[in-house]
Image (cartoon, rainbow, N blue to C red; front, side, top):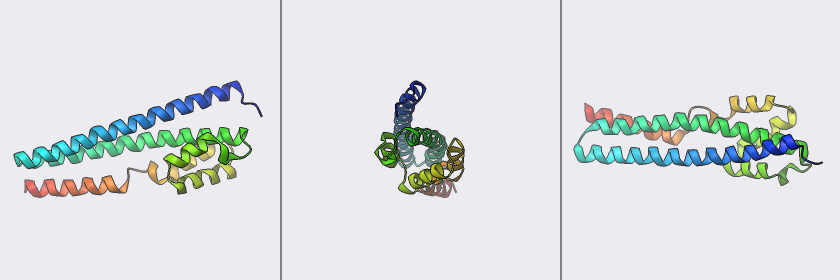
Length: 158
């Protein structure tokens, strides 16, 4: 089955936006990770706990931004998978399926595939965004690091 011109343009846009969002996430993690390490270094050197709290605040901002960007990426992956399902008889051969397997957790890819098979259309995208673990607020490791930094900062203040 030939790809409709509109869907071809849509797939190109999905690849472009996915690439852009991945680059943005990498830049955000680099910036806020450097901010956190710099704040911790200043806190140790200057014996000032406010810098530890500043680093923790930076991680909270990072988690909020990352949560937003992940939701955008899931919506793009889901739309791309819907198009592949429509035009590609063997979905595992599709490029977006491979991209989503590389970028998402295996359980989330399986959940997305199940939702797409059970409910064709745009409804699975909203269901996925409501249920997927990564679209909720942040990830466990940055949250634990932030909580640890907050406790250390408050302990040093007291």
